[in-house]
Every structure is written in C-alpha cells, then in structure tokens.
Image (cartoon, rainbow, N blue to C red; front, side, top):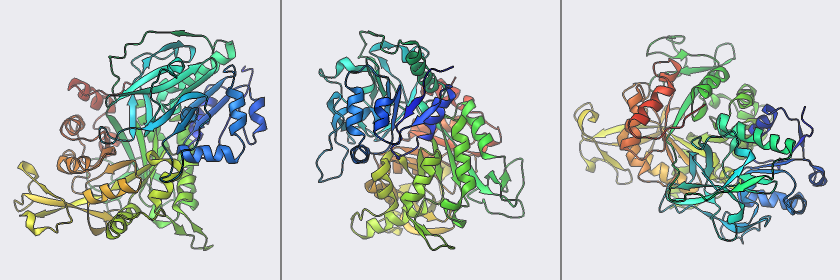
Length: 560
C-alpha cells in the first residue's frame, strides 16, 4: 500500500484530468490543493501546468500559491513533479506574455529565460512525439528505453546555458534547436513533455517517480557525458478521427459517410463496404482500441453538435471523461466550439466557457470549424485587425495556441485559367489524374461551413493564414472532394496550405492504403495525417501504416 497521497496543484487551466488518471493508474490516491497552506503539508507535489505562461503565473500570484511553491522547492529535497508549463514556471521568466506588457517573473528556481522557437526556421508549435538525450541517470527513467518517444506540445522552450546545465536531466532537438526537455536536481523533477500523454512510456515515468519517492531513491542521480552531436527526431503522427453523432435512440455512435454525407438518409445503417452512412460502434470502445493499436492522437468530431449547445451535451462530455481514464495519448474534440445563447434560459455562453468544459472533461485540444472561417472573413475584411474577442483569440490567450486546432473543409472549384479566379483566392495548378472533370488544369479551394453545406467566398490558404494570425496552433486540413474515396490525400491542397503557414498541418480526407500516409509525408510539408473509415472497417491497420512509413525512411512512433 502507498505510504502517502499525491498532492495535485490544479489551478483551473486545461486538461488536468489525464494527469489525475495517470496518478490513479499507479495506485496512488490524490489530495487536491485548494489553498496555499496545503503546499507546505504536501508529501509529494505534482504541478501539471497547462495553458499560457502569463495566465498561469497570474493565477499563481492571485491565488497566493507563488511564495509557498518557492518555499517548497527551495532546498530541492521535497518531491516535486512539474509537467510542461509546470517546468517552464520554474525558470526566471518567459517571453510568453501579452504584447506591450512586461514579462511576468517565474518562480526563479532555475536560472534562465524561456523563449519562443524561431518561426522563420521551423514549424511552431513543436507538436508530436520526439526523443530525449540523457544527461543524467535517474530513477524516474529506469523503466524507459532510450528509443521510446514522449509527447511534446509547446511553442516556448528553455535554452541550455552554463548557469542551468546542472539541472538538465534530458535534452531534445527540434528542427536543429536543442532545448531542455526534463530537469532534475535532488527531488525536484520536471518535464517539458507530457508523460500523461505519452502512452505506456509516460505512465512508466509517472509510476517510477512515485516508486522512487516511496523507496527514498528519488534524489539518486548519476551525471553522464551526453553525445550532443546526435539529434533527436520528431516523428510523423498517425491520427485517428471518430465522427460522433447521436443515433435515433439518443446514443452516441461513431459514423462514417462519404464526401461529408453524414446526415440521416435511406442508406443509414450500412455496415460494410463504401457508400451510405455507417454506424461503426461506440466511441470510447473504438478509441480504446486505437490507443492499444498505436494511434498517436485521437480526435472526436461531434458532427451533430450544431443542433444544441455543448454545455448541455453531456453525452459527449462523458465520452471524454471515460476515454481519458484509459487512453493516454492526446485527445482532440471538435464540434460546437462557439459562443451561443441557451434557448431555454437565454443565458449566453462564451466560446471560452465551452472550451473550458471540454478541457476539464479530458480534451487536450479543441477543434473549431465554421466559427473559425467567419473569424477569418472578418479578419480579412478589417484589413488584418484583431479584436481580441474571437473564439480563437480568447481560447489561445488562456490555454495557449497549442490548444486550438482549426478544421478547414474546402472543396475544389475547377477553372481553365488563373484569370477566371478573383485575385484574393490562391489558385493551384493541377496535373495528371488531378485534372478537373472537363480537363481543367487549375482550381482554387473554396471553404465551406456547416459541415460542408454552405460555401463561402474565401479560400483555404487565406483562412489558414488568417487563423494563424489570430492565434491558432494547428490546422486539420480536410478536402470534401477526397473524403471517403480512398484515393489518397489531396497533395496539391496540402502543399498550398502547409507552405503558406508556420503552424503544423494535419492532412485529412482520402486515405485508403498504407502508402497514402507515406506519400503525403514524403511529398508535402504536413506533420501528421489522419484517417477514419479505413481504420474503422479494419481495411488497414495502424501498425501496417507505420511499418510502411519506416520501410520508406519515415520515422514512426513505436508503441508498446
């Protein structure tokens, strides 16, 4: 039996549920810290910082946690595990704060300033699975093999300096930039990566940390001579999407149609082959299967959320809560992330409040569609003015840009010449089998809203650039023409958008074979690729996709 309870500092930002579940999975009880006095009484303190640095430090200051934390950490002899922002706040300061506002001091435990990755040299945020270079041997990594990757999601990093090198447990390289990915000195441990989102590898780290506290070996480390000439590598992610909707009985089911045909029709209930709308099972059970099979991320897309507000959408919230109990990879949820008024009470809910409900239920990222397109239109029409009130801006300000995913649903508009298209749209040249039905050699990608039912006079590239400026951290790039066809991703679209933005792009729509993932990673600049139907129907296994990637020189995460 464990000899202590784990004190969890949850200051109210982001998805802490997964950290809680990881601790519970190790067999330990949790005591929630609700006032500053509890910090001094803690036997073990876990600080899962999620969100933006400025917001986190403001809350710690306002709620009176800052000085008790400093006191707890002062002698480095009391067990502490900080995660992501929980590591960054240990430094003296960070560049992550509002424009025109002075930098907010950190806890000042570790020398150095947290800085932003250079968007001119790399895609930012750094999202995905990456490796680690070991600077010390530590009890918290005793069950983790060197080749096991862990999950990162951040735009800011802690540089290595002479002043803080004694703290470094591991370092990681992203696009040529080496940074501190974990620290340990005495009993103070913190990671830039998310162990609670790093599958069984991350669970082992949490468990080994608690075991080391239990057996008194946490502070036992051995300095190493790391080989800093060998870089780590960010892997390409394989994402599985589950389109979720209510069936006639009010239950949530995973469904799949073709070219966005997910509405009820006479073909509903088809379970085999392509065509029709197919109900394919319960979302939590399917997601658990994909987690075990090696999915790097899982996305729940609530395709009927437009019918009611998310605050009342208890089944979807329950899906997230249940999924996060046993699924320890990143979870994205989309559908209904917008401001709306409750029809019965008239109460207005902001998009930030809606997102907060999803985060507290277990989501790591929220995906927005129609609302983001309208925000992009307003941004363009205003000449690039930010209001600070859009869903994208308000959510990213509190939770960080890495928490905001924009789902873009464009369709091809074929033309014979570039001159036929309004100059505000980006025109793409086509070739080979991609030509239009009448041999057209050009097209532009027209964005849609309301699940593809309404076309807007704005192209996918313009929307992508606009939402990046507003604070989005990632783009899920669909293509109505390719959806459900099993003919591969739309490479022309992927190249046009990924080449126009500096945030990561997830390729979506069209996968039907293993090589479709390899091809899109080889020929375009996307960092992840997503599929649904081919995995649901077991036409292709996740392990087969990753094996094909590796056989063609593309690194893929090895799950265990």
